Length: 435
Ligand code: 5AD
Ligand code: SF4
Image (tube, rainbow, N blue to C red; front, side, top):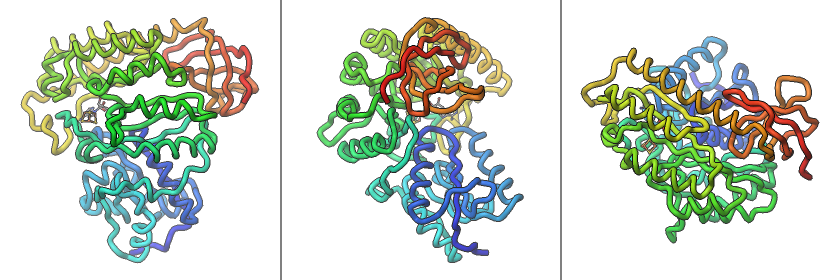
């Protein structure tokens, strides 16, 4: 049964930061169409902006659809990477109204109108023309904003669905990005995080890389901080490493996934870097910016991973001393080469390896936070804390900082870090920068 055209909407994003960005853009698009934002529980239209990177992310979507159906009968649009990967199958497996892929969401208003008129509403095309030009301008954002500059991936790591769901590597045009950055700053952003599946593979038509873009954003008045994520070790150019030494507004933080400490497993993963080449990149980055906070991603239990391979991962962690890191159990993704490989690892082995790896990462995370006690640094206030008078913000090294202050969201506050826990640090205000 077709549903009436919706008057209210909610967007729920799962997974990575790019989905958060896409979710914001879809919300802006629906608001520009005259729909009002509402809670997912009572919205006429619920957009589930999905993630396909691991099994549980997909399962969450289907249970969310079930929950929404139990409590009402909203129009449901499935967007994001599950929409791209499953396409029409979603209609067969769950009762939804719209399926729209990550490169087609600028067509959401038309698809919603089609669904309301009882027409099939599916768009998983990856058009050559970018969706960005068809989206409304940025108007209101928080102090820390995301900006997608690059999408897709040509690396084809053997475990990963991204090259299939997000498509080939595409860089947005320099001028469009600078315009959006300026609009974000006008809309209230003090910090911009440049996003891409391989953000450091960004290049313009003349072959200039991400460092060129960062240097251009560095000239935008009112922008205090620049970050970028996620990077590939092979695309860490000299220019980008130099930018870490030279561009003050580029924050001292680098998320550089390694996935495994074993060169044998990295080869099977088709990572195109080795343990040593990865460590050499980190040496260069640390030489350019000695206080840089390092972050990474790890997969445990990739097919064929032996105890000895895993020990190499632990040794790499010991050597790097990450400020933070994410670790995951390998999840076979349909259609990827690794899903067909022999020697899939037993779940209990994965569990045990994940626990050991996370214990090592937590140890280093706490040590990093403890080592920052006594540091003076600016904090960008992002939101209220739980305690009266408490606010939360981020340090240059991306630590969550809590402090008692009468500063407001969006203020930059000079603090001294005074206490450290595994997931955050406590600060005391020194003086307030002029807003
Ligand atoms: N199984 C487990 N983790 C994965 N990742 C990507 N694909 C898989 C998979 N099939 C992890 C990688 C990547 C992060 C975003 O998700 O560590 O860097
Ligand atoms: Fe996936 Fe590898 Fe591309 Fe990262 S570099 S998105 S892990 S294929």
